[in-house]
Length: 389
Image (cartoon, rainbow, N blue to C red; front, side, top):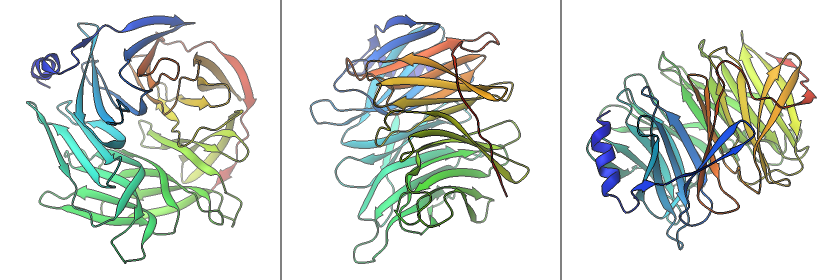
């Protein structure tokens, strides 16, 4: 990935090598990576093929709302960080086949959707040509196998005087132009959303409809020609209010979608997987408080076991859960109000999770060297499964 060029650029940045403080919390090793400004928000983490860790996140440094990018070099065992842009609302990161980072992000003030990528020598950023008054809240970036970026986003306000608003849309690079499509036009769709691409170039998108009468957790599938949508939970009017917050998605080796989300009203952490055309839904745990607008994290290990990260806002703690038999085992990663908007990936039996440091400010990244084992936690509620065609 021309890592040397990227590292030299990072060395030349305002913030160079970060002397990260590492502490142990049980079996978790926690690095305090970037203490600049307020707690990091909207962290997005990926591990590349060389074992380097990439994180995009937003820091409020004296109201500048910086888009920050951090890299953990696997050979140097050091963190480096730099600022990519400013006046940023939320962000999402992915890697291409050369292990170069690509980031989608919104403006904190201005409401536009932007896209940046490392081309091997420098960052290239652009405002995407979308005729919308305000793009806000969550968005998600994924790359097709041929390297075309696709971004799902919440169009809070459409084109001036059009009447279109609060709907889920997608913009994809078609090779010559950015192609814009509406995924779900029902009002309230997409305020929370997350996307993943499979090896065949299909896109899988989980999202929430947050309107009172149509609230639900939903799934969309891009088959290369059009988006197909379905409701996972909350299809009856009013039944799904608060369902779908903090949602996220991961694909297993067979491209089956695994999702996590919150039931904000009942204060439940949920997990669903789609196999053979049917959804199975389970309750992982109950929290005392749901943060807003939080995002859970999810990753699948080499055995196909899902790991789910979530933040209990009332306890101020970050938890990671995984199933064993009919139960979910839960391990506490961090506390002291740390854990907002986590992002997780598992690489060579190492669980990596990024999140905001609510106690001291900045970014934290925790890792668990599993060596084929799993974190030892306490048993949670028994998963209550239900199937749906």
